[in-house]
Image (cartoon, rainbow, N blue to C red; front, side):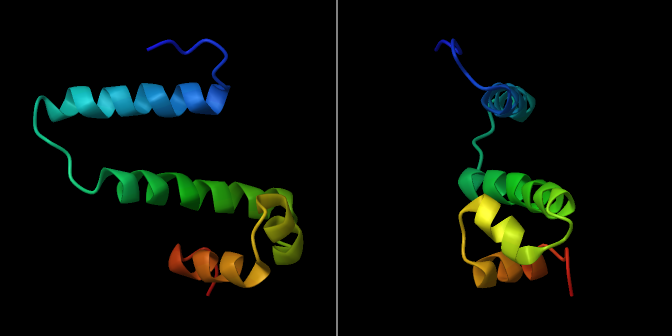
Length: 81
């Protein structure tokens, strides 16, 4: 499969997933979707919050989500209390 035109983020994810499957060495993965979403979501929220000056309304707007949803996710990932 070609990576032509892939964004740097897409390329990084693809490279990491290929390494993950190599490391499994034939073992079948379980819960891969949820694992990947959790692995990407926390640093995404952390970096966006930093760049938004920890303003949840601004960060929620940048992320295209409701502020209450953002707050719930920040609590889930223990990025706020």
